[in-house]
Image (cartoon, rainbow over all chains, first blue to last red; front, side):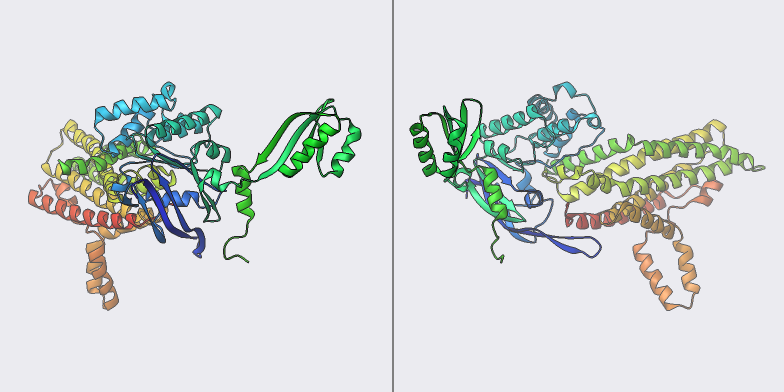
Length: 315
Length: 261
């Protein structure tokens, strides 16, 4: 238990919306945990229940069922949030403040002394790349700059656990890379990071483990490598010296044929066995193999596989 | 030390609320209009044959009082809804800040704003009286204090209602409660004279729920420059403080159960 910094156990939430209080199930039986010093990704399409889960864990929303623990404390308690840093999706701040005043305010909410707040604010402004805009009111910030300010406020008290909801929304490529660097730095400092995103390559690049959520349910939890199907989905052979008269023969063997340029063609097949056949055939036909690649499942494939798989209890 | 630490967060929220309020352009507009109204009491005073000083005191304190109520309703109902609609609350209540700390901090910030508004408008009115060389009485200061206490009660009601309803509903209901509070004595008298048991029953409920805002009225004393007993001012302050505390406690209870979707 000591190695677990955040745990969701069978969390469930149903919202009631509109005049007729129509029920909308946002979350069912969500169970997963974040371990110390790991980067954990909460992934899923829009409406999957990621933000609801995060809101429950941060105390913004109370669960209908289930429970959670944060750094050894029950979620929803003030003490549980003492070492939590949280960046909401699309954050808004008091527009009349500048980033220095904003960080000072949030530091005060953690009970930090004035001198510590000032020192920490300067460090974070530098870290998130807002040094050029310290005196500018937040109403004049772009979406990306607000996101950076949001990241800084989440880190003001040097938290043990950081929860980031769609942290890269609105950021340019440089900003996105900076977020990756900040997450890496947090981990190097022994912190734990949990972030929700639907930008899968970002999650794949940064996270150790993920929880895949679809339709309010957790459809898979674990290290990305374990969740991904190990089997080879397709192969590609880049061959040189094969004329177009060979295309029919290749297609008869079940291989795809795509001419890359005057000299090279790309042969595609379904799996390693077909790859071996393709390699042997290229050599037999007098061609030369310029490249061979096996394509395995990516997070995006897993995402689509889970999204289309029938759910438990479904007909 | 622990007590000081406990109040650091509400204190920070109160200061932030106060800073936001004094930068609010709508509030600037209300204040400019109020100053103009207080000064317009000079013109109204001219309409009186011999009692222009009395008219200035009477109209001036009334305008100050109504401005306090306007600011209390306007700021009170937008206090929480602005945080909710702009989602700024997401980054506050996810810090080690209890929901009650948030409500109390916001309310204290509003009380600070009301105090500054009272100082400004009261300063203008008293300055006007002194500059004109009109008779000055301590009852003017007492009346301004009573207006501040009334503003605090109305603000507490506005915050309470906005903890679970929309700004428009909260605003309308707060105004209604203010009017009932001011008419309480008349309503009581009417109910006593009425044969309807239902009306009498209704008034007994109103007597508990609706704040008695007639306590803070000192129109006659202001007009005649009759000083109020300070113990009476203290009694009204105590009543208003107790009523506001209860209402804000209820707001804390409701707000602590809210989901921020």
